[in-house]
Image (cartoon, rainbow, N blue to C red; front, side, top):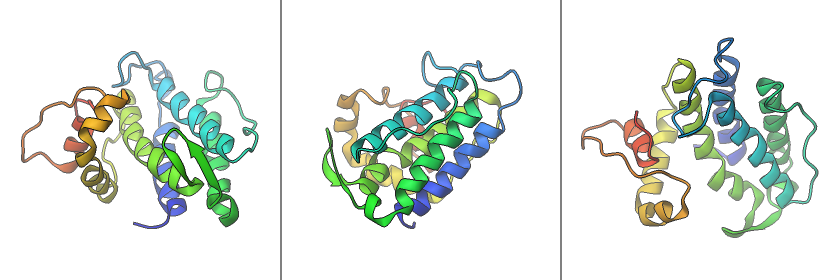
Length: 183
């Protein structure tokens, strides 16, 4: 499916299309994540990703507007910062140490950020009435990779209870249901 930088670019572009597509007056519409609004979906992605990734390699956070003032601008600043990290081979391969263990920065981004971009693109689309279709290859890849980790994922507290779906549901429906969403 490509390098982490290539995958980030595709998934970030897709998420960014959803950010740019939020209609006027819809930033405070409820999102599928309990207690969140559309703006909170962007806040989650734009605030924690740069903080985790830049912090892991000792770099300062990017300047940019707050999500409250300018959600689009906040997302663009976060995306630019992560793309810059992944574009520099020395930085992308720099070792990081987090609760998940020691790994190169690009592996940390692949493990924690790519599926988040994918699923939160759906959250933002659902909250604001946009196209909910996700990249089918990424969806299938993440579903196959995460299924064996069901117990560990549930115990992390990062996902809600798995939502039952029919056995013949498509992979996007299965992945979203796995994460506790009701597609």
